[in-house]
Length: 266
Length: 162
Image (cartoon, rainbow over all chains, first blue to last red):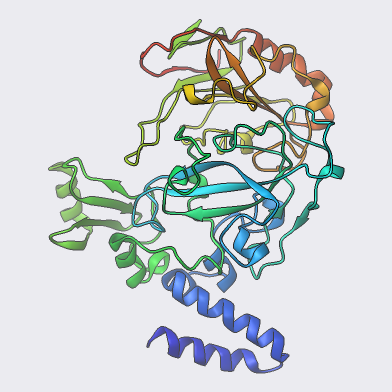
C-alpha cells in the first residue's frame, strides 16, 4: 500500500464527524507522519503528531519551538538575530552526519539600557513568551533566556530564544557571524516538526524505516549511527539486531548469532 | 585537585566533576574543553549545557558547566567581562534562564574572558525557591575553579562523588 493511498483512506475515516477545517488539519499531519516516519506511525502506539515531532514536543517539556512552526519558514524571523548553535551527531535526519540547530534570539529593540548579565527585560522585546500552536510542535516561543553564544558576539545583550532553525549545513557556512566553536546535545536529535520538509534519511535509517522502524523486529535504536572502525562503512545497533551499510553493499540487516559473530570479528 | 586542558578545580566533598573535550567535527568545527560539575552523579551521556544531567537534579542539587570558546571570541562584546564571575549574582538567577525550562529549576549564564581565554559559565539550581541557600554551594565550586593562560593538551579527567 503506498503512502498516498494510506493518507486517502485515513482521511476518509477522519472525515466522519469532523469539520472541514479540522479534517484538513488532521490530513496534513497524517500525511506528514506517513511521509516522515512511516514505520514509527504505523507500528508504534501513539499519535501521528508524536511520530512527526519527536520527543519533547509539548510546551511543558521546556524546549524551544521550530521557526517553521511559528513563522512558516525554516529561518530566523524578522527582528531576531542568530545567537548560537549546537549539533546532534550521527543524525538520521542529515544522512547520518551532524544536524545543526540554530537559535534565533529575540532582540532588545525597545530598550537601549537595562541589560543584566546578557539578557534584557521582557518589556524590551517585541515578542512575548507563549507555547507554539503547531499541530504537534507545541514547544516554547520567546521563553528561554539562554544563548549558545557562537554567533553575533558583537551583541552582548539579547532576549530569549524566539525559535530555532534546523539545518544539515554547518551554521558558519550559512551565517558568517557564527564561529566554529562546537557545542553538542544529542538528546535533541529526534526533535522535529511537520513543516521541516528538507531533512533526509541516511540509507541506513531509511532501511530501518522501510521495514517498520521501531515497530519492526529490530525495535528501537540503542545508539546513534556510527562509522565503523574501518572508517568506510556505517552501523547502527537496535534492540533486535543491527544494520550495516557501505556505499558498495548498501544497507544490510544482521541479527542473532551472525551479528554476534560479526561483532566479534570487528 | 583535578586538572585538564588548562582548567583546574578542587571540588568540594560530594561533587562529581568531569573535564572533557569531544572530537572536532569533519566540517571544520572545533570542539573545546568542557567542565561539568554536579552534586549528583553525572550520567555519561550529557549535552554540553548539561542535558541528561539537569533532569536528575533534586531540589537541593546544583549543576555547573564551564565551556570554552575559540580565541576569535576574545575581545568581543559578548565576552567583555573579565575573570570568573565571583561572587555569583543572586538576582540574575531565574526560572527562565535555562537551556531548557524545567519545573522549579533556576539558571544563570555568564560569558567572560579569563587569562586570554573565552568561556561561558552556566549554573543550574535544583529549586529557584531555595536559591539563597543553594548559592553558597554553587559558589564553593566556582571559587575553586582556575583557568590557566594556555590550555594544556592533557587527557580528559573524571572525579566521582567524594
